[in-house]
Length: 95
Image 1 (cartoon, helix red, strand yellow):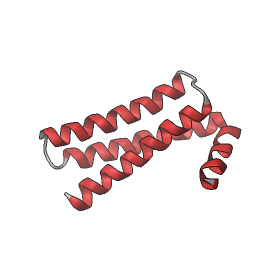
Image 2 (cartoon, one colour):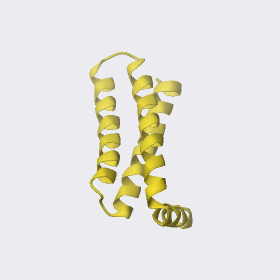
Image 3 (spheres, one colour):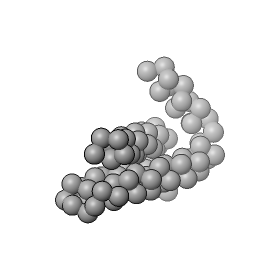
Image 4 (spheres, one colour):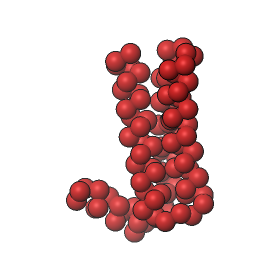
């Protein structure tokens, strides 16, 4: 919990720069996840995974643009990054 709290404090202290970098970073990571998902075809399973990752990235970007509370934005970004990494690992190494 201290890692989360420390990271959030750094994010909150430098919100404008951190949010800008987060949009770029998590969008690129989401695009990579979408690429790995679609590299295995376009079945229902892949389309569901693609929908999940697109929704996660859209929520993160929209929360920044809508100027939500910093903690909500941070949590959406964190969720988007974790989902992207999990789906990249799932589609690259497991499937």
